[in-house]
Image 1 (spheres, rainbow, N blue to C red):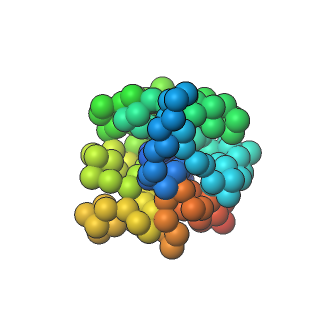
Image 2 (cartoon, rainbow, N blue to C red):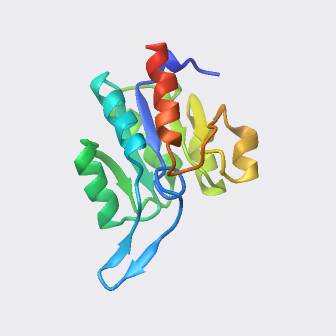
Length: 157
């Protein structure tokens, strides 16, 4: 297992990780709820020079807005191959995959988790994902799980 102090990129799934997985359909499209604790954790990582990326199968305007609000510029939205997206991000940043932590919640995230130095998931992630992750948080997705992982990283650097 890689060491948290060597992590240079945290790649985050959105639905079920940064959010609780719920989608609200309205006349203006889809909206989601993001947790301010997760946002604080993301901003703290950025302040320490850790790169953050959002990697999601979906491409929602609300995800782009949240990324902009937090200063996250690395976006792979509408990604059908998260492992390829993460590999491309690592190459772009000039870092090895061993310096990447991927956090997701469902089986579609597993290929990306398998190639990264560390993997993390929220407490309510799919059972298969919980069984293979290096870090399983004590809280659910969209409820501060990203903040919990951010705290772990910050304590090591």
